[in-house]
Amino acid sequence: MTSRSIGTRQPLAEAIVALAETPDDVPELQEKLERVSQFAADRIGAVDYAAVSARPSDGRCTVAMSGELAAAVSGASAAPEPSGSEPVATTMTWPNFRQEAAGMGLSIVSVPLFTGSGAARATLDLYGHDVAAMAPLTVGICAAYDPDLPAPVESEEMRALDDGGEELIAGFAEALSVRATIQLALSLIEGPEEDPYFTLRLDAAQQGISLSEAAAAVISSKLLPT
Image 1 (tube, rainbow, N blue to C red):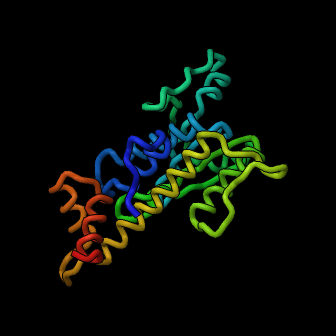
Image 2 (cartoon, helix red, strand yellow):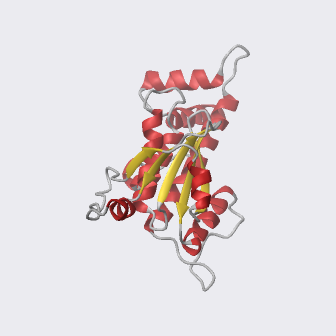
């Protein structure tokens, strides 16, 4: 139930997993949310726009536009391919983008984004013009939630996921695993006057480790034989 090494993750997956390990109140939370949207717009071929909106929604969202689309809109040369370590997608604040996207004929796939407490603090909405190319993203997200559901496979009815789509699904599945690990640890932290999340967060800060690492240590100490 613990997460893999950072070095084995691709950038979009890493951004999603890192968010799931991030305490809810850190100042850089919004920046981490925006990075997820930028990597999604950069790396998933079917996605033209990737928008992040807070929960509960106040109508505002940060929208990342793929480099190819941004170049087409501006008439400029196409943006360089992202190197992997940093996203290059153009971002903007776009109120009520979901409603406008419907009028633009865009298909939408929505993905909850979790932070360290386990709360879904934001929604990542992926928009694309090609319905058939967006369909395997929906199937993949549902399969990540429920392993009994079939994963997207290339067939006459459905296209294969591209590398960016694979990153999205892998990152979301691992974020769910991180979330489950932290929630299990919180259920094991004892003490009638303790706030389990605060206790875990303090423990992680004192040791200089992530919330998921601190959670794994709690689980090991409580459930594994010594």
